[in-house]
Image (tube, rainbow, N blue to C red; front, side, top):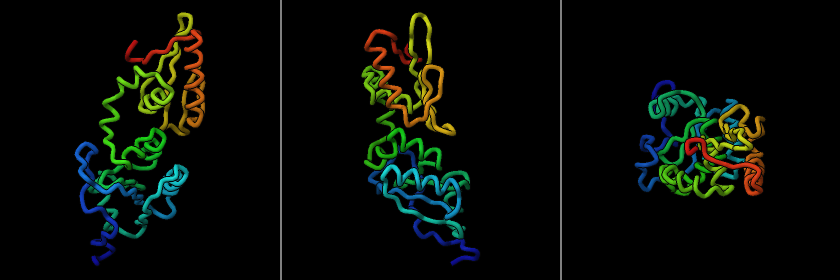
Length: 200
């Protein structure tokens, strides 16, 4: 073992982080690299546990070798870092967003995130509650048109706190399904028209 912990690389994935598009048959293990007491490290564990996702918890408080490896792979020394196989999903905010929008579950299931991005036109045409929810979480904006007036419906899953904006007011992101259902109900009754911002 090297001086001050350098050279210790236990529990470190054998390959560098690679984009989702170039993944081969990589293991789908979810790993959290973090410290015992860091606020964001504790928070990311809580988010994963609340989502019912099993993960390997690698504490790197005194493991300078692994911390140096993480910095080389990700370009910064901030913790936590969450990996699915060899793919780095980012830190707390990135992981929280991926849990909310379902991308973390898709990645764990072996799906390509590029494939889900490619079908946004299909989702826009579908206009189902699930399709609208997914697109809002990906950053799309839905325009609600009523009697010549327009208001936008959008989500900020990375906000502090995460919120969805509808009828000029913020709502907790947990109310996203309710908000989407309300907008669809108004559209079904003919009270409003819905259109995606870029498609107006």
